[in-house]
Image 1 (cartoon, rainbow, N blue to C red):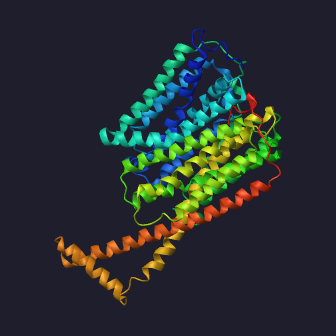
Image 2 (image 1 turned 90 degrees about the vertical axis):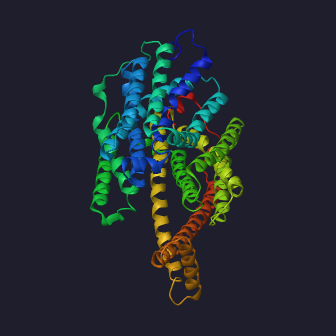
Image 3 (image 1 turned 135 degrees about the vertical axis):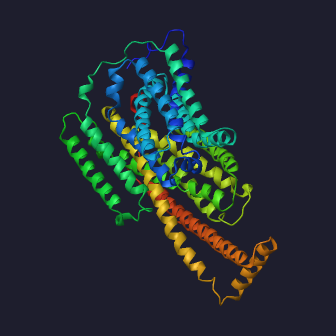
Amino acid sequence: MNNKDIFKSWVPNWAVILILFVCLLHSMILLGVYTSNVTYAASFLDVEAEDLQFAMCVTYGTLLATILIESRFSNFFPAKNYLMAIFSLIAITIISSGYVSNFALFIVLRIIEGVLLALPALLLRQLLIERFNSKNAIIIGFSFYYGSLLLSTAFIMNIGVWFLDHYDWKYMTYVSGLLEVINVFLILITFNGHRITKKIPLYQVDWISYVLILTAILSGAYFFVYAEKKYWFESSQLVFSLIVSLITSGLFVFRQMAMKRPSFDFNVIRYANLRTGFLLFFIFYISRATLSICHSAMFSIWNWEPSRVATVQYINGLGNVIGLILAAIFLMKSMTTKYIFMIGFFLLAVYHFWFTFLFVPDIALSDIIVPYVLQGIAVGILFVPLVLFTVSAVPEKMMTSSGIVGVSGRFWGSTIGFCIMQNTLSFLNKKHFLKLSQFVTDNSAETQETIAKTTQSFMAKGYSADNANTLALKKIFGSIAKQSSLLSNMEIFTVTGYCLLILVVLIAFNQHLRQTMNLVKSKVWIG
């Protein structure tokens, strides 16, 4: 691909890079608008938190499937018209979602958004990378791009909280749509209209494989997201979705192995570094899922306001920035890949062990700052090296397939991580609640004294004796529920910390990790 002539002659190189970055960051909007404030979005759509998690999986899963066929579209249409049409459709779709309160229709829009999210990303990323002329420039560019994605959660959540305090939810979708219109304008004035690749007919698109893998991904995501809520195999819906996922996955694999020019080259699995990269991505996203437990504790245990929780996330974002800078320095100095991963996962382990002692009924912000920042640093250190390590693990002709493996690791890691946390918290909360409730008995003098004091406090506020006694019992069992959550959180963080320490040791003895990664421009375009 030659992008030297795709931009108009008057546009300087620094402006081209800035415009491409701005256009690429539309994914922050599509992935973050409805997940930035789960509580409000759930109430707006009249759904549960699991439904919103599934909606996000639908978007990300559709993105993953669409990567397989994206190049066919970007090669068929001229780049300028192609990108302008996509960003226009994104603006229409995201504004339309603000008027949709039916969840089924909302899921359809999320599928459309997943397709639109994938279509421009690879073309824009390739154009961006070809603007960098050195290894260090590629590292800086990718650190900035992925750093922006890491910071998008805190950024969009704070914007969302501000909008909800001052305006209606729809205004947030208006602003999101306006940003896409800005992308259209930037492309209109800076791009030339000619074709930059050879035109490939659209009838060569492997639609059968696309439908098979999309069905497999969405069915599998449905199974894992709703597993705890629907009691796993007791639900006929979950059993059906798992069977559909397994059958369509098998058909997809069989079709790809039989085709002369498959959409996905399964030969990439032969490369040990790629398998290692996928596994590390998978574990990385599962261990990241514990951060949601911290935020849940801020809301439900420590009773922090949504605006305060949103602001606190900037502290974690500061850690991300520090980690990204450290990772860029490590990569520029060609530090051994093994050591980068060991440092990152070790810091994640420290964060988990530290936070284990912070799950108490009340806590000050100053007490959590250091481990909270450590989590951000660890994520920042690991993210870009993991992306570059995975996509550079195979020969150039397999770069698309290696990139899909990396995206798959992120998708299934976050999806299964959500499933693991939901099921583990549910099991541990029930176990601890039952154990602690055993001490609330008529024979316990301490229990009766506590009930009497609490009842008196409510009666002093004007409640009748019966209502005061009911409220006292409710308050006591509420306290037991909070203690159960705190104990469950401590156990999860302790076990996760030990698992990460074991991972660090295994990385240290792993013989397949290459010393440094090969940062060839054509190999890192899809990560």
